[in-house]
Amino acid sequence: MRRAPNILLIEDDSDLADVIVEVLRTEGYRVAYARDGKAALELLKEQELPDLILLDLMMPNMNGWEFREAQMRDARIAKIPVVVLSATGERARPIDAALVLRKPVTLETLLRAAQEFTRTSK
Image (cartoon, rainbow, N blue to C red; front, side, top):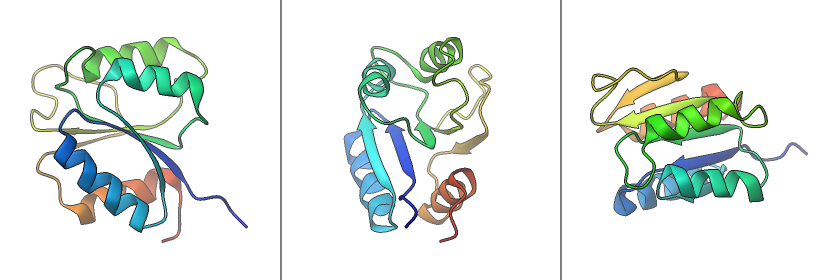
């Protein structure tokens, strides 16, 4: 039996995060959640590496750009695909990501991205 894909959500809006986590879990994904980039880096040290990272850009403590820079410097986690979820898109500063989705993103679009980057056949 194939294991369920694992996703790390990095999002400081707890209401939005709750919805995303619930929807992804309902669809059969395993989901870990961090409120900012710093907390996400700690999770990545302690837990099984995710198949996909969903990353907000505008967050306190360590924003999405800073997280992505730290991720790219760490060979252990550098190749994990990142889908950015942000109200600013990339306008403020470009980011190297597999995909950028502008908030508000529909749950259908989010699920399509999760399926594409975790290679599931849902």
